[in-house]
Image (cartoon, rainbow, N blue to C red; front, side):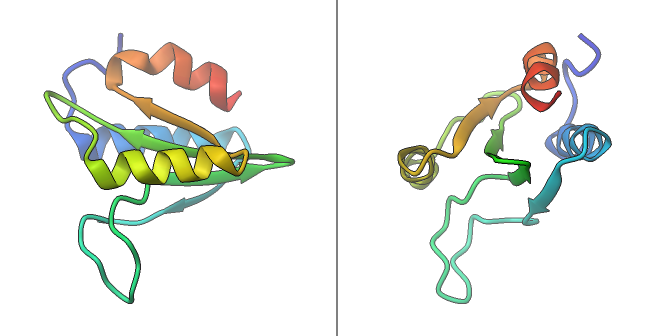
Length: 100
């Protein structure tokens, strides 16, 4: 795997770059851990659309795990039909399949 053992910021940049090359419209908030402007924390790292598909991705590296608020957002988005994923750098091949 090309992405194994990289930092979160690098992983995020790689996914964003790949998604844009595949024609996705991408929304990425720098840090959703804090509540600001009355937004709930836990929003996924990346939200993107292409055609009739909407995808939300949470990216994790190292020993990082999903927080309660992230699990809640994932469930809420999935309930509306949004494809939701949690990926690690070792999931590079699956990420490529989802975004191609």
